[in-house]
Image (cartoon, rainbow, N blue to C red):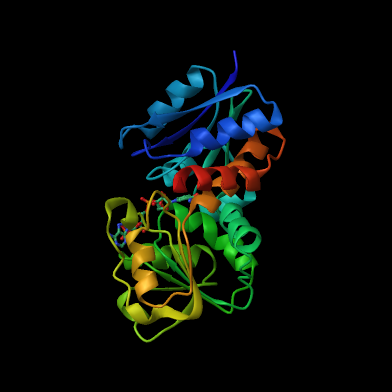
Length: 272
Ligand code: NDP
């Protein structure tokens, strides 16, 4: 029987992860199956436990469970520990290991696929949920000139900034008025609901890249807004999705798949 993996979340039907991991498995000759696992909002641990009991070897974790997955894991990688959020669970010899590949995925997409150097740039990150937590450490490692985090619920942003020793500035959306950034990353789940974070239009500096972690067919509300507000470059989260998946695959299987060819295939299928 092939090894079993899945993406767990709520909602999860939109996830492209099963397609990506099936292609990685084909490419690398690994014997595995990868599905979608919808967990009730109040039953993450019970759903993950049932998957493990059925022989499951690993899970990708998507919203809103990255914080719960962090508490669920018995052992953590350094990057998951710093993020206090887990997007990759590995089950091996009765041990639950938690990792976070979101940040490596985002930075890989920015620097390799989009050829955008974060170093020395003014960076604005929107949102303070599980996805935002995962990317703060790897973005800080790129040494941006400024790093600001804005969130609807201010104390969540402040808490996140504090957990990284105050290395980034936390604030509200209203406090962004009059400021400009070279890279604006939407790590909120607003696009999923067809909504837009309350962003002042002047935040995009000349030549700015607007990056929405959300991906799908058509432009997200955030990217449509960014286009209208003068952002020079627009990117959705499909590249990050493929890059974080490749890193999770490496964690589980010890082999790194070729992410660039899979990203190209997904973009072709989507845009066809
Ligand atoms: P969480 O549920 O953990 O966090 C949601 C965040 O969005 C919170 O900060 C919340 O603010 C904010 N938010 C929700 N609605 C609005 C709104 N209308 N206006 C402003 N802020 C809002 O979700 P995750 O962090 O796990 O995921 C966030 C997004 O990132 C999702 O769309 C997910 O699909 C995407 N993602 C993509 C990845 C990829 O590989 N491309 C990887 C990981 C995530 P508040 O705190 O005030 O409630």
